[in-house]
Image 1: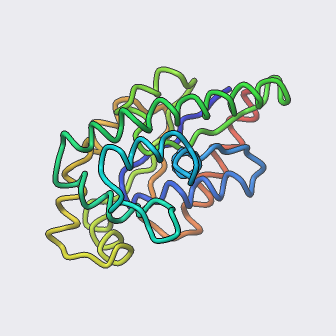
Image 2: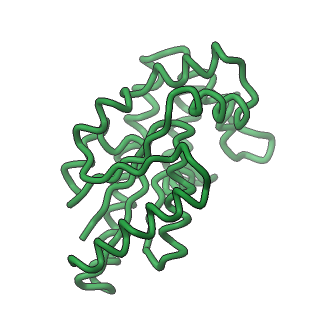
Length: 199
């Protein structure tokens, strides 16, 4: 069984993914894969430099993710260009890891942690969508604290994503991450145990 774990920015999906790992879940993190496919020497990094110029690299030849993010955040065409370079490679690598898991854990449960699960159509590839949801005011507060940005910048980042309410329509499970860490842990444990009992 494949679970697609998703949630908007600063919703706490990585925290939920870590709880699932503690409970013994196998998790493939799309953000981690996204970092792998643009390491120095990879075809994707070469294409990014060709497309955006050498200014998007650090002195050591690694990708300056902040610099690149500032370019694509302002420019939808640039974001589209970047996604055309990275998304097929991320998908290819994730598919490889899924195949490996299926061979080594027949009948096992795999969690894919994918921020844009619904936006890129990956919800169609998974058996269940789990959404980590957060109250809007709490989301703003966390995002400002985490990224050290202004209220206006935080609102812009949130507005650039598919609304959380829209994502709920695709979710089999909604994990409410507005309470205490203990409360979230309890929810995750109960959902995981129920899943195992029914699997």
